[in-house]
Every structure is written in structure tokens, then in C-alpha cells.
Length: 549
Image (cartoon, rainbow, N blue to C red; front, side, top):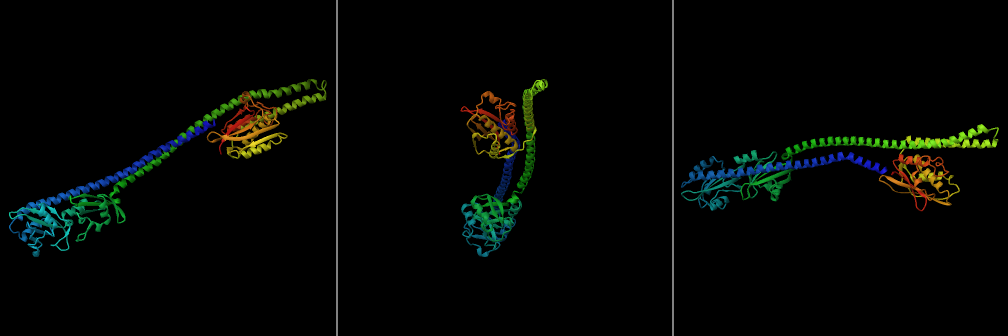
């Protein structure tokens, strides 16, 4: 019964925890989804920034290529004369936004310059203008890196060299302009720059051609302007870096195949603002759902547990009621016999006295009958007291606490000193584990078992009584009381705990046959069980289980 009850309690605890645990697993899964969703949203923002940068780089390439192509066509018409006056060159480039312009012949000599620089006319400029030399050598449009203009002092420019044919040989038109002040610069600042971030147009040397933040006129490299970003770009075309006390994400896209590229960068708190807000909202909803669901699961689990606990209690009470009813039936049968016997004896003795005393009976003979009446009355009183004890034990509350069973057994053995006076009994008491129980009831049970062992060994000159323990079911300890006295047969073992069954003619409780029945009731009230076994070498062992402290 103890094992079944313990298993039932374990199942009950498992069922109570099952709902919250299942919900926690779902919450953990949702939390993982929440983390994944945050990463997904941030990755989507990174992808969006990269896509915008790639589109802007493609537009920049198309814009510069379109300008150069139109210039080549117009130059072949307007700049193909034997001579090209400075005024004509000025008119040609006025609508294109150039800061400086140079027209060179096929040997790279300056034919016309605007703004005017007479000292450079006729000079070979291919050594100082690499993009012009490349345009002549390869006969293709070439864009220069950022350089300091020889025509416009203290101004960093980017030039486009356009070769074109004329009746007088190959010529090159080179127009220099400030990209940041051009429509391309406006496009970078207004359409490319991410919220709170920056955009940088870099040449193949890492110099800033144009940028969204304001720059000085002199040429400056990205490594001078934003060293952490330049260092990060050396490692990877996109990623993260830290600058100005905050984390940034950057991405880049090639504009020309020779190292020109467009770079955009944005701080995390601005780039991921929408993603973070969405994740926070989702997190609040998830947390609220988790708390509500956990509370609901716990409440449902607790309600189910209480309901099943109530059902188990009802079944236990029904079993106890059935057992008690069975005991009452046995008691009724026993009482009808055990109480009738002394009553019959008393009645018979009284009739003899009434019929024969004083005429036919001496005072001495009458005294014998009176003694019979007294002894039977005393036996009836013992029977009634035993019945009252059994009844109180059935109805009373069990006061559970930690009990030192070793000390309790020692005290019970001391209380039996008068009963075992003059006997040679070797008492072997092991160090017993403590238990949970009612000290008064357990003392009564142990005293009864020890008294029964003393009675069982009365015919032995040297008796031995042992009290020990061994492992029991989970949550219980099994205790034992063994004596080497009379060995009971199987029939007697079955009747040991039946009320009014006397095993020995004398003794404390066994005089009316209720002692072991009371012990069984005490152990049962502690959710334990008691049984007896006969040993082949002689003697009887009583085993009983009690909750572990």
C-alpha cells in the first residue's frame, strides 16, 4: 500500500508539473523564434542597405559613363578644328559643371586650357596627368583618381579623360570637377545615405572622391577620415566596426573594376531601429503570453491535481471505511463471543449463589463463586478498555513529527523492566534511522511488539531479541523486531492481527488479544504496513514500514 501510495504521489506531482513544463518548453521555443526573428530582421536591414548601395554604385557608374559618352560625341563635333580657342573650350564645358578643362593633342601637349594657364600651353602633360596618358594609350574613356588641380590651386578634383578622333589626329578632352558639388554628390547625400549614417565614394587608392559628411577641399583618404571603417574595409567588403562610441554596420559595392567603390555606413541604433522596435513589441506580447499561459497552465495543473488528489482521498477513505467495516464485523463476531463468555460465567455463579447460599453452601464456597464473578467482571473491563482504545485510535489525529526511533525503543525496553524481571534476555538494538510519526502512538506500538517478544521467549532460559532495520520502499524505512521464541505456524501468522486473538496466556496487551491489532492500526495510520515471518531456525520476525524523516 505504501509503495502504491508513493507511486501515486509521484504521478500526481508529475501531472502537476507537466502543464507548466510543457508551456515552458513552448515559451523556450517561442523565445528562440524571437531571437531568430530579431536576427532575421537585422539581416534583412543589412540586405536592404547592401542592395541600396549596389543600386547606387550601378547608378554612379552609369552616370559617369553616360557623361563621358556624350562628351566624346560632342567633342568630336565642337573641338575638332585645327585650333580651339579658350573661349570655345569654355562654352563647351560650361553646361557640364567642370571646374577645369584641358584639350590635348595626340602627343599629350596642351592645346587649350580653362581657366587660362598660358604657361602650360604646348607642354606635354601626360607625365603629370596619368588618366590622360592612359586615355591616349588605350583609346578609351578614363576616370582619374582624386588629385590636386594644377589649374585650380588647393582644390581636389576628379577628371574624366575622353579620347576622340579629329581630321588632325587623336585628341583628348579632360574635364575636372568636384564630385561632391555635382549632381552625383547631391544624389549620394540625398538618395544613398542611410538614416543617421554616411556614404563615401572612394577611388582606387582609398581617397574620398565624394562623401555625405562635409570635407575640406584638400585630398583626404578614408583611413585619415574614418580609420576604423578603412581598417574594416581591408578585412571585408561588409561588416561592423566601432567609432564615435557606437557600433556601425557598413557595406560596399564596386563602381569601377579597378578599385573604385561606394561605401555606406549606418549606426546600429538607427539601422536596426525598426527591427528592434518590432522585436520589442513581439517580446512584450510573448512575455505577456508566457506569464499568462504559465499561470493558466499552473492553475489548470493545480486544479487537476487537487481534483485527482480529492479522488484519491475519496478512494482511500472508501478503502479505509471498507477495512473499518470489515474490522467492525470481526469485532462484532469476537465481542459476541468474548463478552458473552464472562457474562455467562458471572450469571452461572450468581445463580449458584442465589440457589445454594446460605442454606447449602459454606461461606468459603460462596467466596470462591464471588471470586469467579469478580475475575470475570475484571476481564470484561479489560475487554471494554481495549475496545475503547481501538475506537480512539481509529478516530484520533496522528501528530506527525521527526521521531528518534532508537531512543524511543530504548525507553520502551526500559518500561518493560518489571515484566522481564528475572529473565536472561540479550537485547540487541541497532542504530535505527529516524522516522516521521506520532511519538505516543509509535511508543505504544514498539512497546507492544517488545512485550510480545518477551512473552514469546518465556520458555527459553537465555532469550535473544533483536531490533534492526533495512531499506524499504521509496520514502519509507523497514524496521524489524525479531525474537528466537516460539515459532508460529502459517495459520497463526494469518490470524496475528485479528482482534481478540490471544497468542500467549499472559502479557500486557495480549491478555485480551488486542495488542497486535492496535499495532497494525497504528502502523496503518502512518501509511505503513506490518507483517510477520517465521524463521526456519526458530522464532518470529515482525516487519513494519514508517515514513522516512
